[in-house]
Length: 451
Ligand code: NDP
Image 1 (cartoon, rainbow, N blue to C red):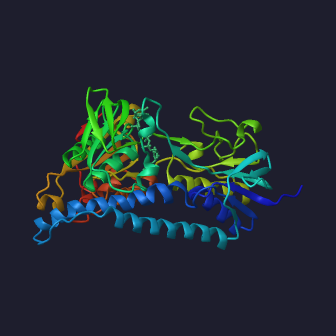
Image 2 (image 1 turned 90 degrees about the vertical axis):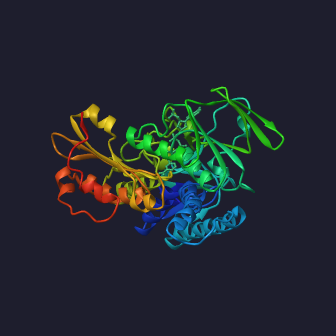
Image 3 (image 1 turned 45 degrees about the vertical axis):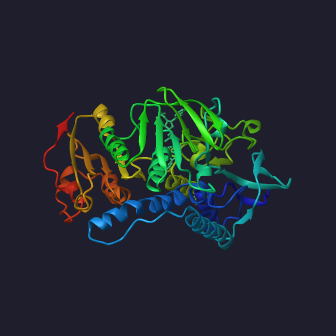
């Protein structure tokens, strides 16, 4: 049986684009359909614009620090319009790069929505049909807002980059990566920022001591964080939003941003008609090779709700190509993934939290929290945390948790050692780089506790 293509990819985000061009580079005839902008969540409405906003928001504090270092400079106003213009131009540039990457590797792209008709056929929104030996679904995810009275007044992280003007006040709801990162961003840009989180402490699932410090520092920096608090109802009042909260508070905000989780984009893809299984959150169920129950159909990235991170989607895409086109069955490695949360201060983490590790085996905990030199000199009270969780039996470092400016950069490197199975003694025999914050990772001599 002959097909139009060897591979048809649905979705032009990080995972889909990588799989398409690597397969094409290996000689496969590949097409890709994208209904929105190329680059997907990460490039267009996620990691990239978010990180640029983090950078923008950090300059306010830098001016004060510079003054403390003797610079005669004064803080000025932040020009949202100027920043937004540059941000949009940068995203246009990056989208162009993604389109070119596909074109230059010989992938035919369709600016259209695609859905599956049968095991080997997709139908595009213009009604045309394409057949392919393999179909890869890489349609990502989207933010979701729970239903409650007035929930339609909320914006999500998708909208925040498009605001015409910066609000004077914002309420951010949620306690995960996105809520905490945007609380820091908005606060840094001078927006009066309130955050509601329904649980006892933000960043559930991460190391307790690390998230405790992030939370403390977020409050110190001026974010009005309410734990154990949720929204009951929202009503519009002039150009503001009145919010009634479970803690009895009632307040007006210019904007309310919900960051209460994301859902896989797996609706209206024709999966039900083909009998392709979906999980509890609507994700596409795949095996360790990213294959669905329909042998010619695979899925990678956030639509499978495994580990929802760009570099993981890329790895899953590469493993798919290796498995299907290079005859080398490869399952993506989801173990010991380093990750950073770009809160202010940042948190970098790899491996097990103290709480998870202690449930698993006897451990030693090495941790130090201190005021870093650069910020202490500028008179800031800010503290950082360096923490290692060590197996008593194997001496392996089971987890590394850093809360500090630049923690994302640090954890990438510490992540190599942890992934290699480094022991505490391997860390100890590494000479300190002095004076740095991260040198503490190799100079902690005595456990602060055992469990
Ligand atoms: P998360 O799942 O991380 O967090 C959702 C938050 O919303 C949790 O605090 C959750 O509370 C809360 N919540 C859920 N439902 C409700 C509700 N009905 N009412 C009130 N609060 C609610 O989702 P995010 O949207 O923050 O991020 C999605 C994913 O995107 C992340 O898991 C991550 O994989 C990825 N991401 C990664 C980034 C990075 O690498 N730096 C940055 C941004 C996103 P509870 O804890 O009680 O469940």
